[in-house]
Length: 165
Image (tube, rainbow, N blue to C red; front, side):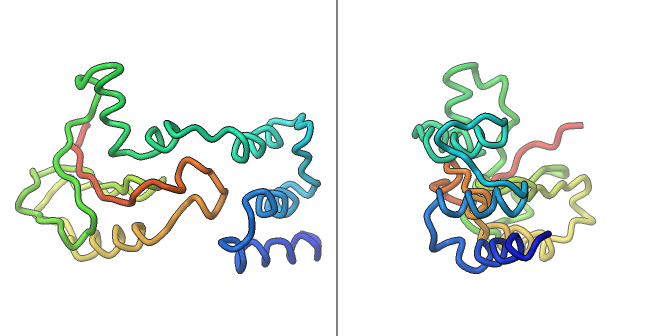
């Protein structure tokens, strides 16, 4: 990584929340790809993705990015039979009650990617650890990392779904 790329990376990390999406994406692109980002006439796949992040902003994208809200959309368009059964929804991991859940279940945050906790055996489930991980995930916004606009306005929640083999 060049000195210029390191400086841009530091700017993104320290001031990312305070700079415009366009400036942030240009800095991030140059840091990661090592080239300037051209948005006037994007040619490469990566340039086109960055252009879409800035200029293709439809309200339904936020619904589609939200793991809880998208359920209504799927049920309406395709039918409820295509949804994994929902066991509960909470605003905080502190609201989770293990007694209300079956022996096996999956917990996940609605606003991010990767905050999935699988319980295959409730008797061995570490609920304090799960609560800590989920509450930490609720504080994070993946919007700020890559400026994926659909995630910006997703209200962070936790859902529990049926565990599927």
